[in-house]
Amino acid sequence: MKKYVSLFIYLLILSGCTNPGGRSWMIPVTIDPSDLDYTPSSMESFEGRRQLLSDSLSSGYVILRSADQGSFNRHEFRPNNYFYYLTGYTARGSYAILGPEPQATFTLSMPPQSIRTLIYEGGELEEEELMEKYGPDRTLSYREIRALIDSIAKTDTVIYMDRSDRTFLADLQRMAGENGAARFRHIGELVDELRVIKEPMEVEFLQKACNITAKALTNVMKECRPDLYEFQIESVIEGTFLEYGSAMPGFNSIVGSGPNSTILHYEPNTRLMEDGDLLLMDIGAEYGYYTADITRTIPVNGKFSPEQRTIYQLVLDAQLAAIEQMKPGNMFMDGHMAAKEVIVKGLTELGLITDPASPWQIKFYILYPSSHYLGMDVHDVGEMGGSFSTFMEQTPQESQESRVLEPGMVLTIEPGLYFREKGLEQLHEIFGDEADSLEIAQFIKDVGPVYEKYMNIGVRIEDDILITTGGNINLSRYAPKEIEDIEQIMR
Ligand code: GLY
Ligand code: MN
Ligand code: MN
Image 1: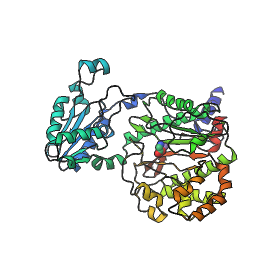
Image 2: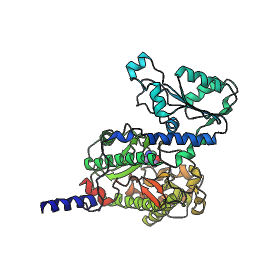
Image 3: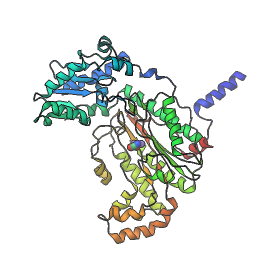
Image 4: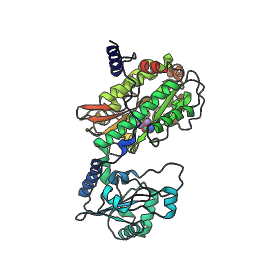
C-alpha cells in the first residue's frame, strides 16, 4: 500500500499538480557539463557549415581569428562567434582560413605556444590532436599563418572577415597597404543566414541555457524580500548560472527594482529594494556559447499590488497573444503587432491613451519592437525584413513586409510597459515635432491622474521561442510568469 501512496505522490509531482497554477517547478536541468563535450557528430555540424559556406564562396578567402590574445582580461576568454561557428575550436590566438574552390582548403593555426604560455595558461592541443579533432586540411604555426595572411592581404582578392573585430580589420588593412580597404567584406554576408536557422545541437544548448536561467529566476522568487540590494539578487542569479555550468552570462544582468524597473537597460544593480517595489530581471545564462534572454518581473514583497497586477496582466496578455503568432508562415512582426493591439486596447480602457489611432501616443508606451533573433549573440544576426525604426512605424498591413517565420528560427517575445516618473514631462521633447503642443498638453491633463497611479511600475515579460514545423516551442517555459504561480512560489 505504502508503495502505491509513494507512486501516487510521485505522479502528482510529475504532473505538476502540487501547485495551484497546475505547472510544475521541476526544471529539467542537471549539473552535468558532459553535453559540452565534442562528439564526432557535432564536428560534422561544423564541417557541414564550412561546406555550405565554400559553396557560396566563388572566389576570395575567409579569414577569421578566435579572439584577442590579451592575457589578463577582466573577463573570461570567449572565442569570436564566427570563428567558433565555422571551426568549433575555442583556443585563443588561433586563425582559420577557408580558401576558394577548387581546393577549398581549411587551414587552422596552432595557437602561439611558449614556455611562458605553458606556465601561465597551460598547454593547448598538439598538432596531431588538432588535426584529428577539428579536421583542418592543414595546420600552420602562428608565425606561418600570419605570413600567409599577410601575403593574401597584399593580393587583390576579396577577404571575408568579421568587420566588428576592429583590431583585426586594422591589422589586415595595414598588411594590405593603401588600396586594400574595399576588399574586406563582412563574413556575415556568407554566414548570417546559416546562423538564423538553428541546428538541433544549437537548440539543445539554447534549451539548457534557458533551463539554467529559469532555475535562477525561480531561486530568486524563493529568496527575494525587501531590504536586499539588487546586487544580492544578481548574485543569486549568476551564482545559479555558475552552479549549473554556465561559464558567464550572455549579457550584463539587468536587475532593476522600483524606479529602476522602468529603465530598459539598467545595469548598476546597486539599489536597496523596498517593500512595494517591482523587480525586473532581464537575464541570460550562456551555455556552449549560446545565450538565453529571459525577463521576469516580480513583486519584491511577494504580492502584486492592484496597480502592479493590472499592468502585469496587460503585458502578459499581450505577450501570450504575440506567442500565438509564432508559427511558420506568419511574419516576423506579427507577434509584435498582436502585442501592440492588446496593449493599445488595454491602455485605452485604463484611460492612459486618449486616441488609440494616435501614432505618438502609442509610441509613448510601446518603446521597441517585441522580437529579435537569439543565438550566440543575444541580439543575434540575421535579416528580419525591416529595421528597428520601420518596425516601430508599422501598421498591420505593413508588417506583412517583414520576414516569413521558418522552422529553426529562435526569437524573443518581450513586450513591456514602463511608467517613468518623468515620462509625461518629457512628452513635448520627444514628440514636439510630431504632435501639436496643445494636443500634448491636453493629453497630459487627461492622462496625468491615471499615470500617477502607475508611476515607477516597469513590467517586461520575455520568452525565447523556437519556431517548429507545427508551431513553436517556448524554450523558457520553465520560468513561471502567471501571477498566481509567482505569488505561490514567493509565499
Ligand atoms: N536583454 C536585452 C534584450 O532583451 O533585448
Ligand atoms: Mn532581455
Ligand atoms: Mn531580448
